[in-house]
Image (tube, rainbow, N blue to C red; front, side, top):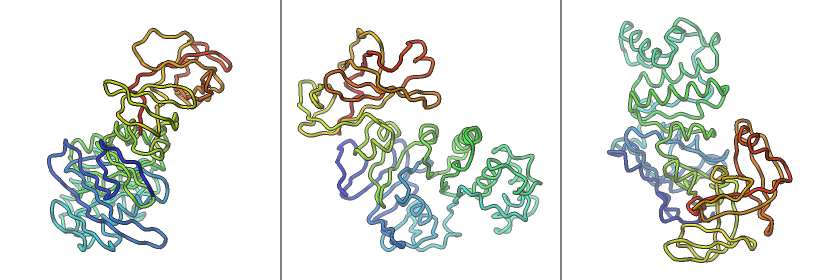
Length: 378
């Protein structure tokens, strides 16, 4: 699989290396030359570094290897080749129970015959902690997650959100050096997911635990992530801050996957002062880039300002076109606009209130205005 390079990226595609963020004071987890084969799945030469106390979110399509990565870190699967280090200690061949790593799945995996209090304190009991101390710690962590009143209940009497809080509490009470979360919010309704997301953020801030979290909800990325890792077909294809992944994807695949939507192939001609002109089917756009020749161009829908009159603006790009489709996506609506001469279709995002106040309907002539810095060239 060929992936375009980006000199500003934290990933070297020829030797995929994902370094921890600059804000991290030291390294917590290091994976070197990670290679594993499980049935038809294969991952080769993955490299990943996660900083101490970092909240790292892993995204990617189904089958990318996200869960296998987490389970191998936890010790469930054995590497074919490579090493895993935790705070500099080689844990590659250490049994799962001795690694100091906790893992939480989306299906809770609580013991149905135990109360919530006993479920949370189970690991402490295995360690020989006294009953009084187990109960104290279980009450403390349950309180942090808003389930302190449920300690005497059984799992089958709880809602999905309450069960997931209990599963997280059971992992966190052992003070793991790394907490692995495999889509912990996916089975929950929107309201519960948002509430638990806030509690995870608060818990991470209080405990400074290093977290690696798999998700397919982009709200998790914006709310929780210090850094994002993108996987595809057993490879790490980009690492970076949320801003880098969402607004500066390395490849067309990542641009598509993160919802950039306005993605085009064009020809780039460098201009002065680090800017360039990009021709797309006869339409000329301006961007900040030193590239030349054949390129991909991406513009996020929220970067486009839509108006019925041409705006007096310092933005380099302004196109005129006809509204060909309006799609209601909940809070935001997507407006598809076909540029009048080239036929290039742009998708802009606007709130329902914005559409109503502008009185925009299909067939209207509108202007789209956007900055050169909003045009990502890759």
